[in-house]
Length: 120
Image (cartoon, rainbow, N blue to C red; front, top):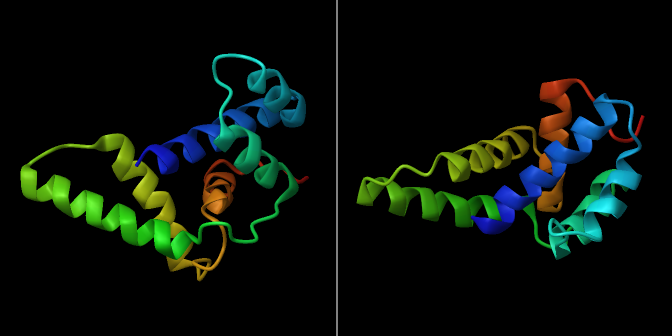
């Protein structure tokens, strides 16, 4: 849950920068030097910028893990809206046949939704 939501947050931050006319690579670099810095921003943020989704951890495996977490939350009557959104991004990737890609490909769904693309 932590990884998928952080990947989604990184994608959103980079897309916001791009849409605002700011170089997302520079935003990533600046964020790495502050409190927002993380391995996910470092590694997955760069993958997003490069559109390099060679799997480190495949979307289909992340999707399976999130499905288990969401099922457990459902059984406990627990609302997890952030996790639900991240799961929907993974669902969208699975639905478009992109389950073999690294889960950083979440940004592809975000790009389609916002019509902002990091690699253009």
